[in-house]
Image (cartoon, rainbow, N blue to C red; front, top):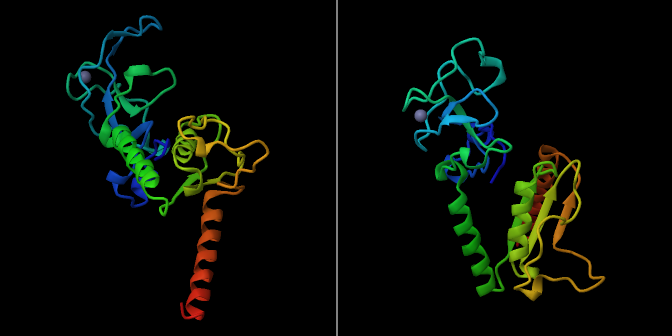
Length: 223
Ligand SMILES: [Zn+2]
């Protein structure tokens, strides 16, 4: 799950079906309806459909190849509405098309339900949630990580938070009151959250080196 809209995970080789871009993607565009030219009402005509389409040929997905000099691109379906990237903008409300193939909202909800149920059914299972670079300005993913972590039985989930600026402990998502095992007693230390202050690449590389050295040590003992 990511709140980035820049297609970087896809470009880095991740299977698109395994990526949930909760705020949309610049790789897909949508009809934005026909604007009035005023702030209110904003639209003279709502979007024609929820069907996404590829970015217009005159507009790229990087700053370098954008060209603001041509005609405003129109929706390829109705030819009237202004085309816009399928990314969630502040105050967008339902003007953003929540397409399951991009956001994976329903798929993620089903996934979290399956995971938490499996953990509750079997105390031998455990979950590790790795949260990377999720700050406080737009904390959507940070909150989701805390929510799934908090929904699991206490001893069966670890939240690893890698963040250069805000590596602090849980502050956003409330703990579930339906499961008393996730409530800490007064003065009890939260040992289920590991906060690492650092950049994503540096930290992941460091962890990889540590795992490799553990593998060697394990092999050396013939285990
Ligand atoms: Zn349209």
